[in-house]
Image (spheres, rainbow, N blue to C red):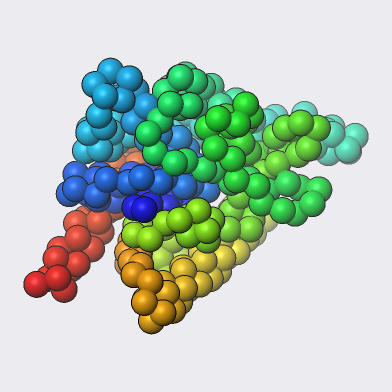
Length: 302
C-alpha cells in the first residue's frame, strides 16, 4: 500500500505543504495518510478533501487536494494569532501559583480553524486509511486513531498541542498531548498497518539549527529550543529505523520502498513573530525539495 507519512514540526509544517504539492501533483496517489502534530493537521485536511471529492465526483484528484491544502495555509495561517493567543502574565502567574496551569498560549483559534474546515461525513467516508497520534500524559503511551473514532477531532487537537505552550486535551477523562513526544514521524505505525511504498515528509533536517543570540530567559524561546533539540533526535531515529526496516525487508525478498523528503538545511521560523511571507517562503522551499527528490528518483530509475 502507498503511504504518505507526515511528521511533526509546528509551523514548519508549511514546508511539508510545499513537498505535498510537489509529490501529489507528480502522480503519487496515497492509500494511507498518517500524521503527527502539524502532520496530523495536514493529514486531516487531505483526508477531508479526499472524502469531499469522493462524495461529489466519486474519485479523488490528489493534485487538487494538495492545492486546496496550500490555499488553506496561505489564507488562514498568516500570523501567530491565527494559531493561538498569548495568555496575560497576571492570569498565567495566578494559574501557575494555584496549580491550574493551562498552557502559556490559548489554542482556541487553531481549534476553531480546524473545526471550520472539517466535515464529519467527508472524514468518515474518506477513501484513504488515515491515522493521527497523540500521547497519553498519564501512561506515556502513544495512541493512534482513525476518523471513525468519535473523538478523532479531539485527537487532532491533542496531537498538535505543544507541551508547556499549550494545554493538554481531555479525552474520555484522560489527558493527551503532542504525539511528537514519542514519534515525530509515524512511519512505524504505517508499516505495521501494511504500508509498502512510503513517502515520508519531515520538517526537520538531519542537522540541528544553531540559533544566534538565543535568549534562554524568554520562556517561549527556551521551550521552542528544547523542543527542537528533542524533536530533531526523535525524527532522526524514526527515519533511521524505517530505512533499516525497509533494507532488511528487501533482503528477505519482500519488496518495500521508502522515500524520505526533508529540508537539506535546518528551517527557521519564529513561532512568536511570523507572517504570510514566512509561510510562503517555507512552502516554496518545500516544493523545491519535493521536486528535487522526484527528479533524483527519476534519474536513478533510468
